[in-house]
Structure formats: structure tokens, C-alpha cells
Length: 288
Image (cartoon, rainbow, N blue to C red; front, side):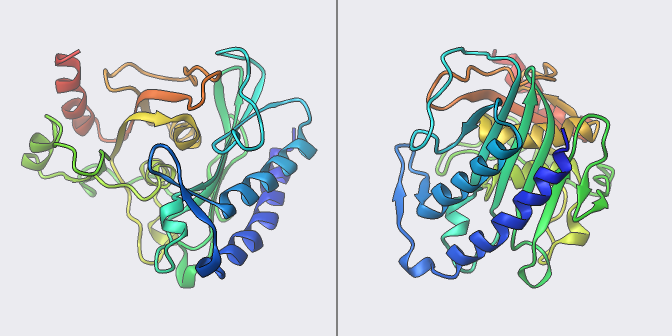
């Protein structure tokens, strides 16, 4: 399968669509979903475009999309094999509908027999002068690319102490947060886009973004929806990072049930910083 051609077509099709909806935010229809996240008419339009492109490329693969309650049905099997295309039309809809914000992206991940093998992340406005940044992985053994260039690796932990450990608004700090602060880490607990934070943990976007979006040494989230985590997990594995869950168990496959309304990872942990990983995992493991 020529995945690169699909990614190229998606980039060509989606950029003008996203730009068009962003230029008409004042009249954009937006509603709140049951989990208090936002759904806009742009999400549905972009999802339809992605599905159309994927279907033209692969007529047989299963599609799991965030808003597919509007367009598709869930599979009858909990863990179907074969090819699965996981789609998040706009990750960071709250950012998308705010004119001054820019940290949102369109995301596709290809899973083959439970293993994430290719990923596409298009962030149309995080580059200089609100230009686009596109992160692509064409398949196993292939290099991660950013705007057609080899992706820079995340700096050593001694050079960056930033971590992404999102939690709900108003929730209490987790047991490991004071330890991270005491060790000189700078944990971010609010997230604009799970995917972009996972990308920033997997590769260094600094030279491609303005304002600069620096790297994270670790990303950890509990109860993560599969469309928020699959592509980031794919990129982290390709980058050779630790990928696992909150108990420290390594994860190489998408181990969620797909025959439910919102397939979720119980927890997702990716890290290049082994010290931060030990701090986060230790108290979680102790209370298991």
C-alpha cells in the first residue's frame, strides 16, 4: 500500500477545508457532547473528507472515527484484526473554534492486526505565520517526517524538563506531581490536543513551530480515547520511546475494545525520560 500517497492527498484536501471553516468561526455551528467536549460542523465535514479519501484508498479496512455515531457504526467484535483506520477529524476542537488559538490537528492512524504502523498528523496553523506542520509516518521501519524532512529527536532529559501529565479541570494533583516539581520538572496539567502533546513527546517540533512548541520528556493520561492516542502511540514506538501504561507495563499493540461507543486506553504513558517515568509509575503501581 502506498501510504505516502494517501497522506499527500489528505494534506491537499484538508488544508483548504480547515482554512475555510476557520475563516467563518462566527457562524460555525458548535454543540457540546455528553462529556462536555465540543463538536462543530467542521469536525463532521473534515471527518467525511478523511473517510472518503481512506475509502478510495482502501475499500476493505475498518474505520473507527471519533464522530462516527453520526456516520458509521461500531464493529460487532471487540478486537477485530486486519486493517483499522482510526480517525480524529479535529483533535482540539476547543482550540479550533477560538480565533486566537492554533493548537489543533487532524489525525489518522493505520492499525494492522492490532499494531499501529502508520500515522498522519496535520496541524494547519502551528508553523510560522500560521503555516501548516504535517507529521507523517509511512509504515514500519520508515522514518518520521515533519514537512517532508527527517524529524529531529527529542533532546536529552537534562536539556528539557517539561512533561505533559493532563488531568481534569479542578481535579486534585496526583501523588507524583509534588515529586516531579521537587526534582525540577515542569509538568503541564492542561492539554490543548492529546495528539500534539504526544507528538511533542516523540519528536522535536521546536524548529517547525512559531510560537515554539517545545518537547516533552513524558506524556501520561488516564482514560484516553483511542482516537486521541493511537497516532501518538504509533509515532512514539517509531521513535524508539518507552510506550506503556500507568503500571509500567509496555504496550506494543492497540489493546482496547472497539465495539463500544468510546474505545479507551485505561492509561497511556510514553517517555524518553526514564527518571520521570519511574516517578510517575511508582505511586500508581503502589496503589494498584
